Image 1 (cartoon, rainbow, N blue to C red):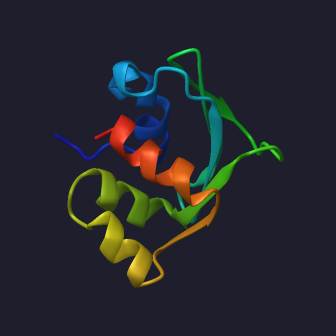
Image 2 (image 1 turned 120 degrees about the vertical axis):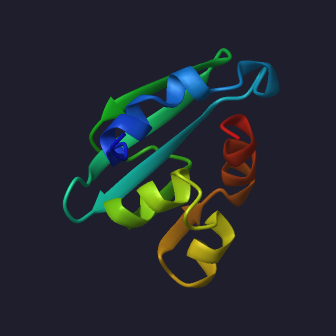
Image 3 (image 1 turned 180 degrees about the horizontal axis):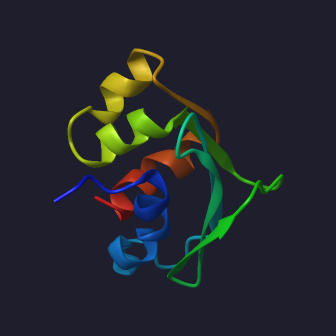
Length: 107
């Protein structure tokens, strides 16, 4: 079976969202991926629901930036998220509290 694309992984996030862990939470996380297969998506959490839209949301609470290749590696377990941040393969900005929760909601 072939590896999923970054687009497939991101657009599949609502199915992996653990809504019981995000009751009462509201946030928007921008995911910006460079390189082949890259693009911009905004993942919104509201009313215990997760939605994904294409494009840049200037009101995002936090931003994740990486190459599409590294994003796939992180999501398929080939590259640890913390390792990606520490080595500069993923850059995080904005509300760090949101990013910490965000990780748990999709674990």
